[in-house]
Image (cartoon, rainbow, N blue to C red; front, top):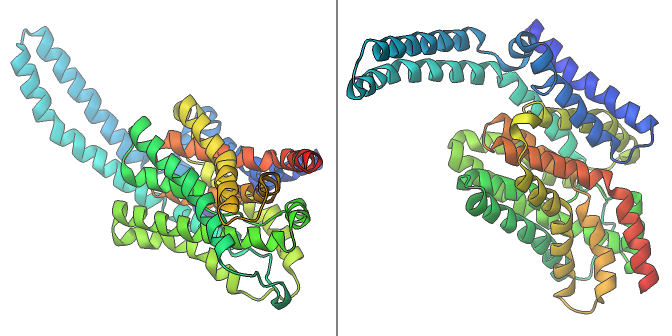
Length: 390
């Protein structure tokens, strides 16, 4: 219990410190970037290399079971070496390997079971932080006098901003990268989910395009989030059975947050969330990643593009299809659909801690969320350029 409290405290304190340092340095996307850096510091990328025993004892578990597995492997390798040197034929070697396999598999299963048990508090912690962050999603509220004229535009924009990057992610993960359907659909859900909170700049840009444009983009983001949550629930349930529904439950905080009253403290709540809980959520995602082992160039390129430009292109298509909008206006209006760093990290972190998404895909998703947040000033520049051209 003491060990768990210490590690959870580190998962909260270190990412916040990293984020505050980046905030002081005026780094864009400081909350997400600082949290990811904090998670990498505590994960196998740094702590796992400079103090592997401390990392394994604090964040992985199963030390004794792994040692027992390693001892079995060494003994079996010694038996095979002795058999070869004594002149045993290849058929005999194959029989010896087959005889060794049940013992090795049993040891590996025991190791995996212990690490799964040991990491249960981290799964609970990740779920709790995700709930807190996601309750703040979509907090731009539709006042009665600001009701949108009809559901066609929000549904079209939201559905396309989710479907285009989500479908591309599923196809790339299965056909190109060769991963199973469950991991592919979870990856698709991560790049399909809608914006966390529109920044002030995103709101101003959307409202300059058309009356109540920010409300339209926010409503479209809610449609995209519903699509993504349904896809993630299906994938996790298929991979884990009923336990998958429990794993998906934190994502339901998104629609729950839409129903909560504002109480006039949205600005204060958002500041607390951005400063404390978004960095911790990002650290939970990065904690299970090792850039040296999980780095793969093509998944990285694909998911970084889909996380930002894929959402934007889908939203542009969804904006144009109902008709009545010009191309440049649609491009400017859709820029807010890219503000999805924390929501993308929520799905990624939950899937990672439940071992439902491959490491290279998860690393690409985390980096995609970082790029989306860090490139927020680029959205402002793009909006100005498009406005000048119009």
